[in-house]
Amino acid sequence: MERLRRQLRFLLLLLGAVSLFISNAIAGEGLPPVTETVPIFATVEKYAKILVVVEPMDFGEFTGQLNEEIGPVDSAIFEVETNTALDLRFSAGDLKKDSSFLATKYQARRVLPTALLGWFNRDASYSPVLPIPDLVLTNAQAAGTIRQYAINGWAKTGPNVSSQEAGNYSATITLTVSAP
Amino acid sequence: MRKYLIALVALAMVLGLSGMAVAGAGSLEGGATVSGTATVSAHVNKYCSVDLTAPGTLTFTGTIDEEKSTPADATNGDIAKDCNCDTNLTAAVTTPLTNAETGAQIATKVDIDGGTWSPINGSVTVNNPYVYGVPNPVHHSLSLHGKLGSTISSQPAGDYSGLITVTIAAGLL
Image 1 (cartoon, rainbow over the protein chains, first blue to last red):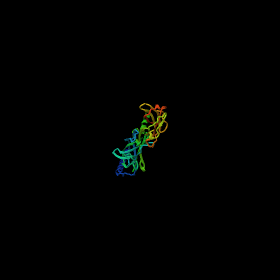
Image 2 (image 1 turned 60 degrees about the vertical axis):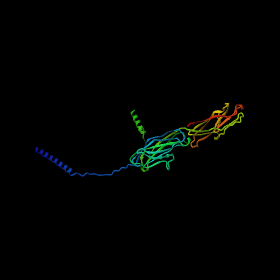
Image 3 (image 1 turned 180 degrees about the vertical axis):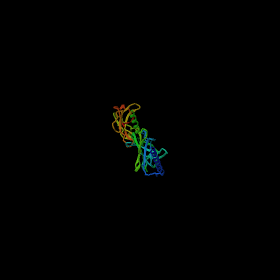
Image 4 (image 1 turned 90 degrees about the horizontal axis):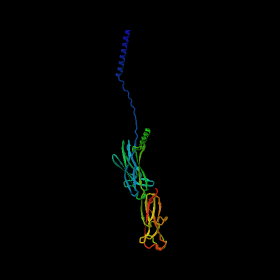
């Protein structure tokens, strides 16, 4: 009986030694790593966002006298964020009330870095800007930037009191961006 | 209560009470554009400019109940008016034709645009709606009418003078 027990113990020790040898042999042999590479793709489209940071551009009250001018009024600021280069188009009209209007000129400037960009609707002498009243700037903002554009406005009454009916006048300033 | 407060705060954020409004955002592919719009406003107050030309002189022979009028045209009394709103135009006899030496008066009336004469020593009013595009100033005739008394002696010979006042008030607008 004792002999059988010793033989069984020996057998167990032998099996353990064999399994340890086998595992070490496998590890020592070094299975080569298996790697596979697949391409992945993404496209970020051209995108832009415009915030109206400050509005309205309020000229307040004209007394109604002829050739009365108010300006500059600078309370219209746009902020543009883009991931691509941009063309800018500034457009606006005269302040209007039905058929009456106040000659209105606008000047755009970039806030930082500061730069005067130009007149739109009417020029410095209130003459219509030709050939188109809009201020169009090509490749005016670089990709991956945030820029602010401030608008200065001036308005004046006409050569007759009756040129502009008493009351409230309104207009809009529009900034349109597009990719070149 | 807390639910309402949270909802109110959320609504305020949605309404852009932070002071910035997203005017526009989007893809620029395929020639698409993104725009933002700011509003511009102004107010023009009611205003009038007026230039008056006095009516011509009335010449009476001196006979009783004699009546004379200046023509209802702009060369014989003119109100040149440049306004930007509806107006009420009033002409009033402030001082009747009066002889400075004797104090004798001539019954005096006034009229605008050949309409209805005012009462003696009274006033007349016409309404002028604002019409855009009408060349200004707009001219209105200002006429003078006088009538002597029922006796020759009541109207001493001599020069008479008086005063007409024209008032422009804003009409309903």
